[in-house]
Image 1 (spheres, one colour):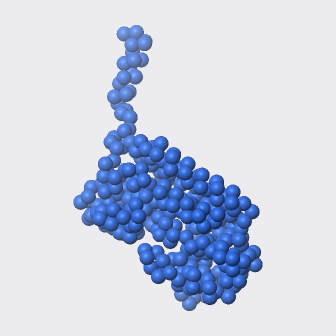
Image 2 (cartoon, rainbow, N blue to C red; image 1 turned 120 degrees about the horizontal axis):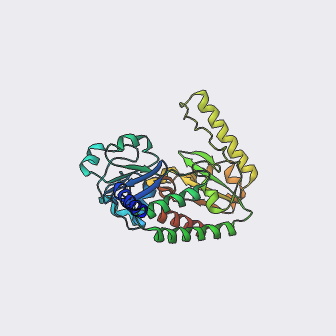
Image 3 (cartoon, rainbow, N blue to C red; image 1 turned 30 degrees about the vertical axis):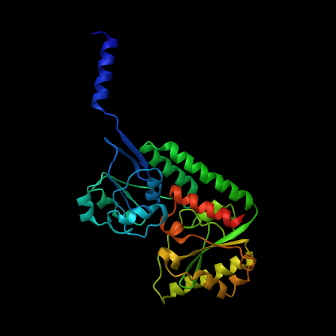
Length: 312
């Protein structure tokens, strides 16, 4: 046997020894490779659910939630737990081929992996659009839906480009309102992506990269009092900066709950004196879309469509 023949034989042997994975999915923790494309998918990540649905990829199990619009059909889907706590007996009975964990269920990943291969997609608060694009292209590519995802992302990017054009030079503040309390979010905070989407400049400085999360203080404690004083000072700083827009998330309105944010702002002795408030430049975001779901392909298109309509 000559050298060429031996090399060809060796190459053939290597091909048979190391089969190419039929399915490969890059995610936040690495890359998942499977011999077959998953047919039965469970997701605890509602952004991923929205994207899977947009791409026409079936989902076999979802967490308990209130599903509306294009996701309304999932109110009849098998419930595999809550956004925070998986229901392991149900999962074991369902026997999924793939589980997508969400940020709220991230602690359960080691246990979920005992049931089925598990992945997760982390959103980067300092680069929301970049991490959104990376996650959705990876998900779509794994299921041979890259062209559809690219078209959806291009539509979103077109909206963002237009928002940045009309908001050039304008400033804003994002306010999270809950039970009469008003908390501001700066770039790098959970809802700091509001500035990235709208192209407005935050009147507050960006959160330091990799800043540790602060534990919630006990009610009535000195730490709670200090935190309240800090929040009040931040609101005063916003008022002094007099932003062009106030972007507001009403926490109470989630899942068709009671809307209280408008009343809170109307009674606030400082915020109701801002130019934005007096001129009606207060935009109340879709609480479910922003708080519960986040970066799904259809959801982010809806978010940017709504922002464009309000801010033109």
